[in-house]
Picture: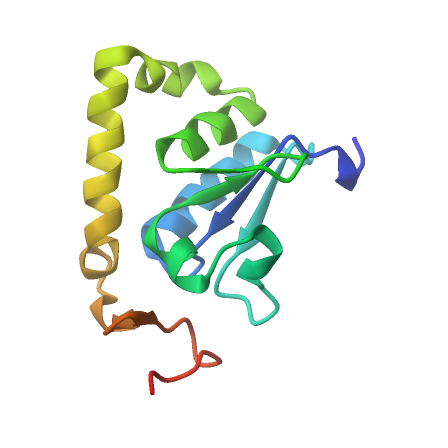
Length: 139
């Protein structure tokens, strides 16, 4: 598979310890096949406008991108990422009606409190998220 044959791209917060662990696991499961691309939203070269989003959008919840450019968010990102690396069965129940609603709810609750839970509550102040040292300070 060439680099252009990826099946799914995940926009990850590389400064988030839990997100970084999940990204490392997904890389291992991909086994170098290139089915999954992980793009770090904390990289100075990351431009959320490439996906029609703002930095606040991508900090608020996980985003994934399909090869056609369409964007998905929330638990659907995890389902598609694991499917891309051949482990879709592991998250398949999170797409079932009752379990799906519960898993979506738990993810949204985690996403709302992610910065505090990962010891980075100062990353977002007011209505603007700051990422890394290169981000603008709120005005």
